[in-house]
Image (cartoon, rainbow, N blue to C red; front, side, top):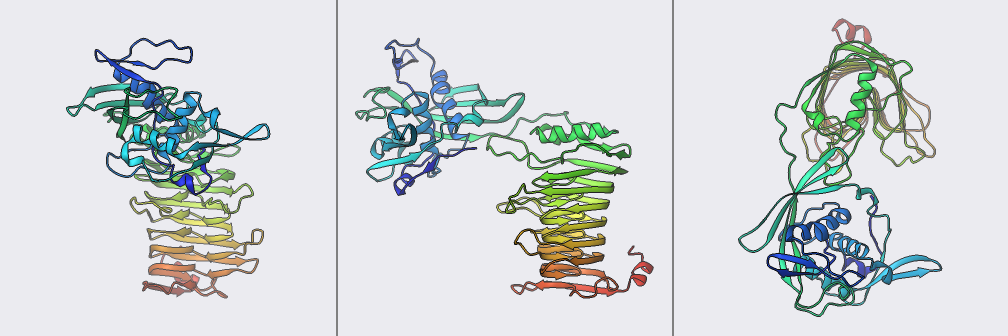
Length: 527
């Protein structure tokens, strides 16, 4: 979604939360008449709630994207400014503030004091800051294009005891319903002479409405809507991917079960759970957030080539996500950053990015390749920056794979930021390769990089192959800042590497690693 970009220090004094009214309203027997149109005629009187929906709520929804407003807290920096520009656009007044560079508009310049008067009227004292001069703002006129299709409907309204108005709305994007919301407005009489911004629509003595608060509400409960969904064909697996990736949120009520072995040869498949909401109003979860039970069935010959972003059978696994009792046989999975190596595209056979949830009793064979965070089972385990949800877990899984990557590469897991891995085994080989000028780093037979996770009774028999100069290479892990409890490694294939490439020195971690020859590991049932 596009944003306003501020130019200069003065802009910081301008940015706040915002939503807008665009026309005057006068009280008349409980109804209000909007200000004169450009032709000088007056519209028919409309109710307060319709006026608020038309001139305030819909503008706020379109230009402020449903950002919540607290009744007392300081406004977020971008709200009043976004609302002001939406107000100017909707009232066809933005053009008069344009500053041209040749025949094209370079930016818009608004007097700061005029903007502050607008903020005070519509957002109260929370939006007023001390300053003077002009606010030079770079504005993209297509800012609201991505949200203009959202339909807003009035659900209910009432006048509160303190004289404020409360409106509850519902939101829709096509057939999908988004979070509902409740707005509160306080009527305010304009007791100042309107400045240049307001003088075309508002007069002294008119009534406007100050935004008191806006908060998003939870989705309505849908009792008895969950169902058991069986998957018997590759097409039905594709349909599950399409449903989850459409942004549907109700699928979380269902449980999905694989009822037959699937051969995905020649089938084009998009990873399940790749949809990531980028709007506060969108209730769709991040990743797959319900149960997928393989029931001991096998998915053969799954091929995902150059998947974008997080890549695997499941792109992301989120809160309440569960994948269990599943076999992936002869999979061939790779991710791509489309020439932008700084993009994070974790890659794993079962899950690319496992922020939360659980994986139990799954086995994998095949080839997995990517750049950053590449693993036989999971690319990256644990939440990214800002994640505060429950920790993920992996139990009783096995990967017999060839894994190729550049950073945080491991036979079972690429890297972690949290989580618990219990009784999982990694076999096969790990290949570390340079990508452009980036040398390989954090390369391990079992896991590439451990940060804040526990590996409990992990077993590794993986040959680590480094084709270029590399940093942090180990037969078990390339970098360790976590706990290794009762773990085993095959001494017959780990020659030439330390078990841990680099150990973090900032804290005390449990490191319980036991080396055994392959024959003894087989005798104890490790393979």
